[in-house]
Image (tube, rainbow, N blue to C red; front, side, top):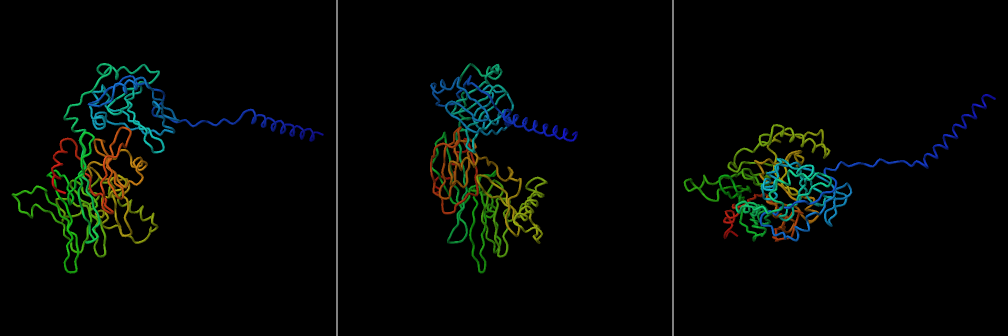
Length: 474
């Protein structure tokens, strides 16, 4: 009887527990914790002050419409005016105020009343589509720039950061930019070196294009034979001649100043690389170095050489970069060998330090190494300023490709006034504005399979001097 009583108690307890669970599950649904996102900027902001910069033609009516307009930021959307960015993604970059404002807006930050040494640039995009940039001056003030109009927004609920706003002389005014400064920031030019296969000789032909713009007007694209490169000592011309001897075919790489020094013999004005049974093609030309892809009867190798000493020793990778670079080169080779499934095989890495080159891919210069079983990217490395001076692309290559799907390469002016886009068949030059790629300005026909090997930019009054290189040189 006692055992029966215990059994009944256990059954009743189990029944009550089961009923409780059912009641609890039906009346108390499972609560899923919502994932929180720490946004770099949030809330609602109101346009409280404006500045017109330089000779912008923004109308007073446009300005009036902008004042008191609001921007709202949350995890689902960013909304300004009638523009909405769904599922926004935020990228934050802390930048030097003086460099950033001079480069992007052609004005000193103190003329805008900005004393901060650093500001945050918050880029908003959605699914790789650029929406806008916002400059956060401090916790209560952000700035938006559009077509010469700078709008200052204060965060709703803040005490309106008077420190920044009161630094701006007067309530609203125009910032005058001196003419010499306007020239620097409104004139840009690109020397673009190109190579194409010569089907008759089996070698390569080279030419240089001059693409320039003044005050948002793209000039006629000029060209001349060979590679024309600006150097500290003046402009040089670099070319390749095919030479045929009995049982020997080779490429002779040469370079010489465009303006010869008459005090020297003709030979001392020219540097030459002439190696028997060796074909060479130019991969890259910088101010001081040239990168070659070389082929011998039973061997292919990269080389980087000083332009002043083309027949000298190849530049060693570890000497061209920092001390750890040699380790990264070897590691990159080992990663490549493993990836192609040849680990453990007798693949020598001797002479790897001089078997490297500079190549172009997707809007940037990259470093490549070569071993007996193939070519590979050198990890975590990019050409330094001694090799390639300026190589910034705006907007990103993904954004460019979204707008121009057949893009193969792209170059952006340091003044961000135009972008040069290479496709399989053409060069397309587009204007740039604060929202990214603007209107198509001109199209230039490329030769079959033509690619770039050099990009050198000039701004300001240098444009007039570089123009003269191409007078009657077609």
